[in-house]
Amino acid sequence: MIEVLGRVFPPERVTTAPGDLENWGRDWTRSFAVAPSAVVFPETVEEVVAVTRLANENGFALVPSGGRTGLSGGAVASHGEVVVSFDRMNRILGFDESDRVVRCQAGVVTAALHEFAAERGLCYPVEFSSTGSSQIGGNIATNAGGIKVIRYGMTRDWIAGLTVVTGAGEVLELNRGLVKNATGYDLRHLFIGAEGTLGFVVEADVRLTEAPPPTRVMVLGLDRIKDILGVLTRFQAEVTLSAFEFFSDLALRRVTRHRSLPDPLDSSAAFYALLEFDADDETAALAAFEDSLAAGWVSDGVMSQSDAQARALWALREGITESIAPEMPYKNDLAVRVSEVPGFLTDVDRAVGRHYPDLEICWFGHIGDGNLHLNILKPPALSMDAFYERCHALSPELFKLVQARRGSVSAEHGVGLLKRDFLGFSRSAAEIEVMRAVKNALDPNGVMNPGKLLP
Ligand code: MLT
Ligand code: ZN
Image (tube, rainbow, N blue to C red; front, side, top):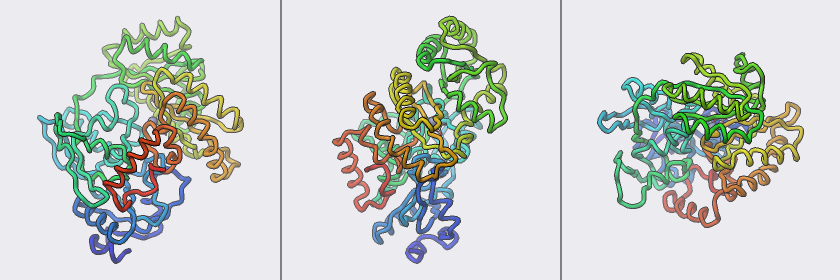
């Protein structure tokens, strides 16, 4: 293998050191075996083509690796695959002011793109907690969403063009940054969210937009989750929302302890909603808050008076993932229509409580777009394997609840290894057959991230 890879990569860009295999062979998940054969660090599209051709000719498989912040095992190499790290393809290649399109290599870190946009008085508005290390190629491969989807949409909405290397080693230039292009199948969108199973994203044309207006943040306490839709509808009628997030009291307890942060409200509530809206709407937001209080939907609330306060309130939401990481959460990333959220959350809570009264649940997520993160926390006494098995065994019942509400078993984290066996709860047999046919057409020898996404 090393001899074969050495035909493309100089020795300093191929590694088989155990520490490197462990580091680049996995994402944020900790429950899957990590066993790649080697890691390579291409610097050019041609090198990605070359390693793909080698894989086809020599019968080995490839796993793409970006910022390794994935939560579904989509970038885990468990079976002797060669990991293709995009760490060295991290350059911004060009920017056109009139197009407002920036050409990035796949390994550009999301925060670097944010910075690049801000320096030009513009914005790349897809935001989530891991932007400091996630890479644009990985964001595209999972169609990453995040905390501003309610206003700005998903990664898909910002990709004007893509260059991909297919599993057959062909380079496809998709859409080339055009706004309008009515020439048949838009293959770009096939690769967005495909988790590297059809080919690897090597470059992308990313759209930027105007810098956002100044904003305010509110945190509201709610005793009943069923009231959250009343609050959302009331605020939506009055203000321009850029986020409408939520977290449970357990989530708040974990994050305030982990980061030594003060409680946002004088008294605790069962759930909290975090809203962000344009500063111009402050008066209207206060009116919506008064109405929500009068309706008995919210028990208390706080609004940021400065950017520093806004950041402190956001920390309560953005710090949750890290604060529960030591408890090895079994992550569920579920989506239903916004109108279904309260009923769905109650059903799921009941199901988990019935089967596993001893397990703690940490709820948080993006109510504004119907995306709920159900994190089941591992009791310290339970081994990782036993815990994982119990959660996995419960999944079919949870996913039946998702299916009954015509929802999704993965809203934004991707399917990867974690949700692969459950794809059928969200996609029909006919759809999965079409997906397989697409995979066969673009990756005939199955070298691109095999074993992920498709059951
Ligand atoms: C979030 O919403 O914070 C992210 O999706 C990460 C997570 O679910 O842990
Ligand atoms: Zn999320």
